Length: 77
Image (cartoon, rainbow, N blue to C red; front, side, top):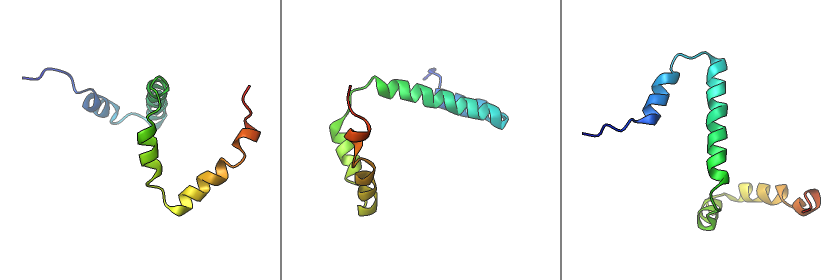
């Protein structure tokens, strides 16, 4: 018998019925934790390339436009 708690289910059940203000705080905290975990992991170039390969032409152009002058806007120190 598996007695390990199912934390995802516990969280989902525990937030049901909370007022919107508190749900917002929960969401902020979850995003903070996710950022902290991702920040400490090295980049997985293969996964990034795979995800980028699924973009359509319009999305690709948007990214190109967004990063066109990246180094001018954000010069390294």
